[in-house]
Length: 180
Image 1 (cartoon, rainbow, N blue to C red):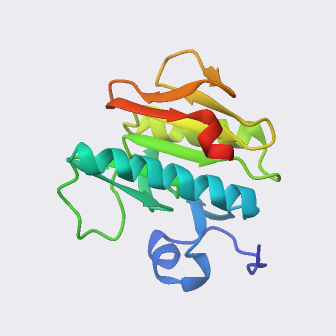
Image 2 (spheres, rainbow, N blue to C red):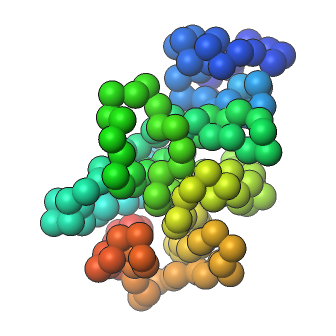
């Protein structure tokens, strides 16, 4: 992670136009550096993206992206989040600089320096803005925590399969495939 200058609150426009913040999140006027993942993190991110993209090749109606800027409102405060992988369904504003809501499916891959609490807070932000399914991938445990708005978390481990629930019907990804 590169060091950013110490900053107090900045405006949304400053965040969006300063290239130094391209890979940072914006939470209540403050720049938040994202923890850079390791090689396994990047491989998992890539595998998730590829598997989801393959699904959408046969089930048109959406797209998969990595590190998509998502403009969210959380308790009346502005936040920009950048999920590791995002599936967006029925987006008619493809020309926008960022998504004006949460993706339908969010995948966050926990980096070694990420706290579980901070990752779960991000998921709450996504759910408050319309996300319907989230996967928190835990590389060190080789497991995936599956979250839905208002639902109890469920963990998928080796030998189990991730599914898309009502968001991506028919999706099936063996958990082992993410860590191979």
